[in-house]
Amino acid sequence: MPGDLPPVPGACAPVGPDPTRPSIARVHDYSLGGKDNYEVDRRFFHDILQVAPRMREVSSMTRLWLDRVVRHLVGDVGIDQIVDLGAGLPAVTNIHEIAHQYNREARVVYVDNDPLCCTHGRALLERHAGVRYVQGDLTRPRSLLPEITGHLEPGHPMTVILSGVLHHVPDELGPAGIVRAYAEMLPPGSYFAISHYLDPTDDSAAHRLARELEHRFVDGLGSGWFRTREQIAAYFDGLELVGPGLVELGDWWPYGPALRPRSVEQRLMLGALGRIPILRTR
Ligand SMILES: C[S@@+](CC[C@H](N)C(=O)[O-])C[C@H]1O[C@@H](n2cnc3c(N)ncnc32)[C@H](O)[C@@H]1O
Image 1 (cartoon, rainbow, N blue to C red):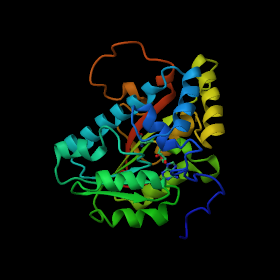
Image 2: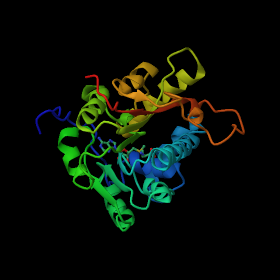
Image 3: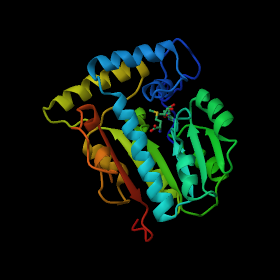
Image 4: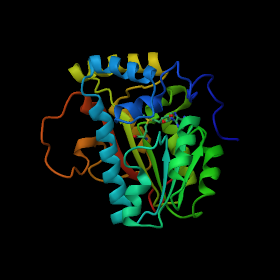
């Protein structure tokens, strides 16, 4: 499709059901306590736990953040269409289950490029009204979006979730440009909810852990880049940031006070919610 960058060989290639290599989706499922994973995924994650013993908390913290974001958007703002790009394997609480607590008519389109996610997603999630699971590559917005919007109300604002996935998109494919391409095609008043691995770039223990984890992720999974605050902030260029802005996920409208100090691992993820202005300036 004109406008999409040509694919970078090997980049974003999904592993699918291959039991000899760890896959992003299956490792994530294991980190959340799921059962849709193989020995190779569990071994990979246990190696991660050697250097980051509280890494499971990053996955659960991300799902709790998504829970708060979706409740806010569907419950308070009135958003009734959600596209979850890089949705992964069906989880304990899926986006449509949160949305449907507030609006039974809300439509949710899940997208993942891993065929295993789509097989599970179609079997388990599509039985619910208004839910679709599409196999597609989010780095090709101009090819993918028409397929997604075919399941939605055209011209009507929606929320695009990019949680824990842009750090699997290599610099060569320009993750900020990909977000911008979606924003240019979506109606004003649409939202982007993005969470992303952070490299704090100071001389802290968190920075050193980010470098070590990136090395292990890229070596084992082929991707998993920890980017700077400035690089992550660039995803929201041209969008209005919803308060409290780009923050550690635990600081994004927490349900209550922290019950224990935040771990180094939990400091390695930032998230924000941005909105396409009603009056576009560009
Ligand atoms: C770490 S999981 C995140 C799952 C979920 N979004 C969350 O936050 O809990 C990342 C998912 O993104 C998918 N993914 C990676 N690159 C992708 C791409 N280019 N297009 C679509 N999905 C992609 C992976 O297959 C995986 O299921």
